Length: 190
Image (tube, rainbow, N blue to C red; front, side, top):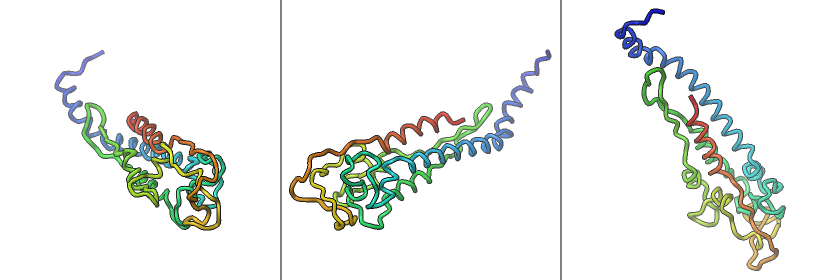
């Protein structure tokens, strides 16, 4: 077997990244878009997301409220609100940027959001400074004071001044778990 001269090897190493950039970009873009679509699909099929999207008459499919009510009514969204939309817009906005050419290949950076960015766009309707999306993970108080009715903001529940039941909100992995999972998967994308 004949060995290539060192100047030929150096020329190939110099030119390969430029020549391979377009095919690498095409392949990376496909893998990136597939993974992004998978992440959005997982978010949309999460029981919390599905329950909130279903509005004030949804069942408590997330199991967070022991079947007493649903998240849309409990959190206190107004009828017609679309609380999932800001999260979906952030996830749809995930993109990547070209960083540099490697010896053989190309390097990209994926701009996946931090959970705190999503928490910033998901305020509780009645408590400034708190996020309902973070509350899904850490807890939201008041379940014992909730009355199911066809009145209130959501048209499905109101808060009582007196405790009417025992029961506790069931914390559930949600945005942080999704972001952490896909940060790892996007990092492994080649």
